[in-house]
Image (cartoon, rainbow, N blue to C red; front, side, top):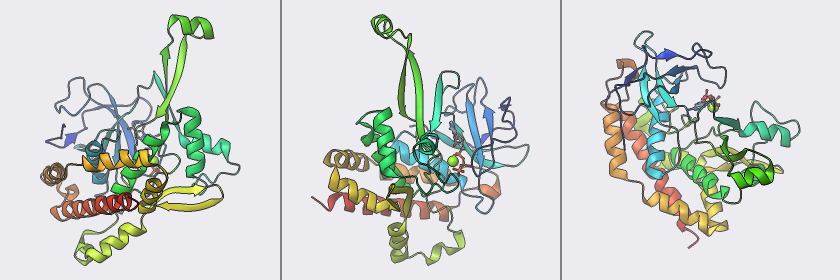
Length: 324
Ligand SMILES: Nc1ncnc2c1ncn2[C@@H]1O[C@H](COP(=O)(O)OP(=O)(O)OP(=O)(O)O)[C@@H](O)[C@H]1O
Ligand SMILES: [Mg+2]
């Protein structure tokens, strides 16, 4: 599994023709950059579009969450766009660099919000207060089929593991790919190309991993407080149009384990394969990454993220085993 050995300096990278200054979507400052034809780092895809995303001003270390989440995704076998620690030596900015997850000319991405707004009258776009599981499931069955449930719930497990509270309706979606039909299908349907929908990789994972907890407070976090924090955590998504209560991280795992043994089994398998030693080793490498001094990952934060994540996995596993 490739891990970056050095921070990536994007100062010399080409700028995107349209969004080189600022990308118009989302809350955090970000811009599009294009990797070199022959990148120094082997984790970088050559001549490829990337999103360089800065942290929320209040939390300069937040960008680490994005790339730690990517590694957790790898360990759980969840499809997350590769993300790396990067900086711009011309401006001094530090952030995460997220690999574009589709080929702009060949595939189209639709955020789930696009369909929610059509499905639900007066949808509250700002806060997404009607973003809910039942509608998400209905849309995804329509677009992808019954098997969507495995991927969707794997994502909910991943979000519970990283403690993501911000998977709103525009932070996930569908990729539409067109591929040539076989000659016989083309003749029968009169169409040269067929459309296929799948979930886009689960992007925007940085509102997670306790990013909002200040380092000077870590010493106040005993086991009791940590468990309380985890138990209170919720997904952004609500249960149903007539039950607009946010689904708890642990509660979601309790629910699926009661209602779907096959999904439960898949999720448990993924959690079992999580390699704790590898995770800890990776976190230690991140601490040693020579990012600009004000933006390095401190040992204290790395340890806190490790503690939080391992405890989350324990509590989730407990929930999944409770009914058996
Ligand atoms: N790796 C990627 N590949 C393709 N599109 C991306 C990628 N990363 C981000 N985007 C697009 O850019 C938008 C904004 O990015 P992102 O959601 O990461 O930023 P944000 O500011 O954290 O958003 P939010 O307001 O949800 O906090 C996304 O909604 C998505 O459409
Ligand atoms: Mg977003």
